[in-house]
Amino acid sequence: MGRRLMWVFVFSTSIVGAAAYVGDVLATPASGFAGTTLAVGRFGDIDVANHVPEGPSDLYVQSNVWAPGGTTGWHTHPGHSLIIVTAGTVTAYEADDPSCTPHVYTAGMGFVDPGGDHVHVLRNEDSIEAWTIAVQLIPAGATRRIDAESLAACPF
Image 1 (spheres, rainbow, N blue to C red):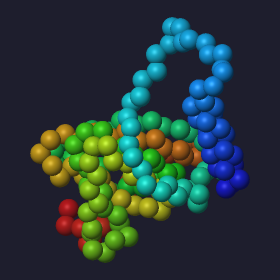
Image 2 (image 1 turned 180 degrees about the horizontal axis):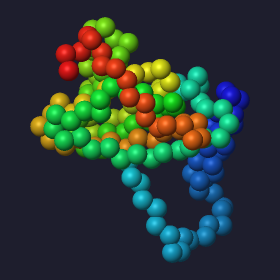
Image 3 (image 1 turned 90 degrees about the horizontal axis):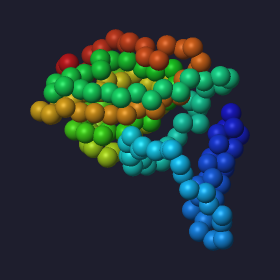
């Protein structure tokens, strides 16, 4: 599976490199087309090698909105998610953290939910709405979200 992920990376890098080339290329102008960037976020290293689904996959692009004090509830996903905060602040807590350490993400930041057995909750602990865009790759036909028990170490 790592080989397939490497080919996707090589192919994507080649396309980006070719698109950035400004030499003697005969370009054709766009016509009747408009591309819209829905969200941009900055990620650090992304390690999803152990969570790439084998076989057919479903790709979700999910828009999420939290009211002040809103929560996703404890849950996991059968595949990984790349999440970009587009407005406000979300705070993530991980079920395997006995100290219930908050991980705070603000607009323009990106983070990875590795999926699998990674149980977590995302909360809006601020006084304004929070928005994210999540791109999820999961095995075809799988349930996108799996609810989980609350973590005893976290008081909510």
